[in-house]
Length: 223
Image 1 (tube, rainbow, N blue to C red):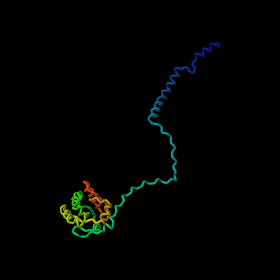
Image 2: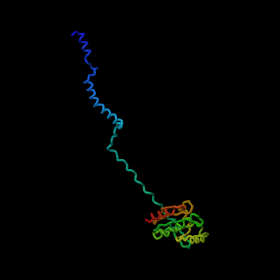
Image 3: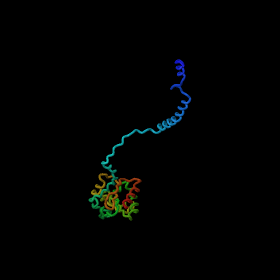
Image 4: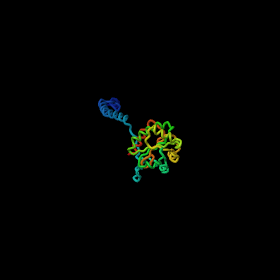
């Protein structure tokens, strides 16, 4: 063959750009393996985002342990009945002397009231019921009128009869009323005093929920 014929034969031979049947089948086989992996990789990457790389914090082996959480603090203790108040001389409607210290060893309910006080008139029948219920369990109720002893003596006695009061009634001198009321002169007021002379609860005024609250305080004080 001459040189011109050889050149024409080379033009007819397949080169890198000619796709033969064998080459097509080879590429198809490779795609059959690669495409499913690529699809799976795409879906996994779409559902589970890749977390950003982080540098771990160094641990100091000599560092002290973290401080424990502060403990829950207990409620502050109830204030004591002032000694001057506990021994201040009192006098009941019969003229007999007594003092609040006489009730130490029992749970005492001290009620400041007056015959002219409307809320007191609603409260006292509840105190009469409580006295009947709790007296045998060691509860004493004492009512101290804030009225003038000389001017109100007859009214207080009649009030006791009308309301069938069976607990001790007397008058509240300034040296007893002032330290307990602490400038809040509204009546009625009630102080629940524990067996060892601590003021457990103070009630000012009278409401519908008053009786159940007072009963609960007495139950707790007797435990």
